[in-house]
Image 1 (cartoon, rainbow, N blue to C red):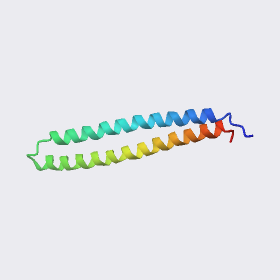
Image 2 (cartoon, rainbow, N blue to C red; image 1 turned 90 degrees about the vertical axis):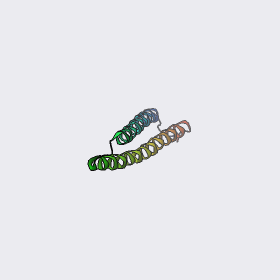
Image 3 (cartoon, rainbow, N blue to C red; image 1 turned 180 degrees about the vertical axis):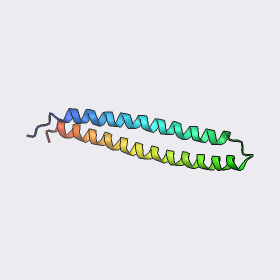
Image 4 (cartoon, helix red, strand yellow; image 1 turned 30 degrees about the horizontal axis):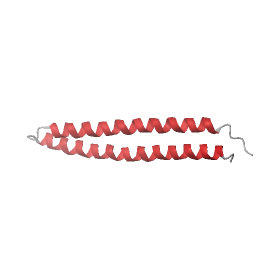
Length: 92
């Protein structure tokens, strides 16, 4: 039989990581939406506005890609938490 007294603490830490990553994902979604809104609100009459629009759209796309990364990390943390709790329950 192995010592599994560490498992609840590790599981709790992984839960916190997952919760914080969810908050990061939410903020990234908000930032991407704001960048797109600023881009849409830009007056397209000048060349500088056209450049701003293109860069804002590109940046919003990059930020949206980070949401996928954060969500993948969040789900991995939750799977790790569940694995720790499962192995602890089974005495592994």
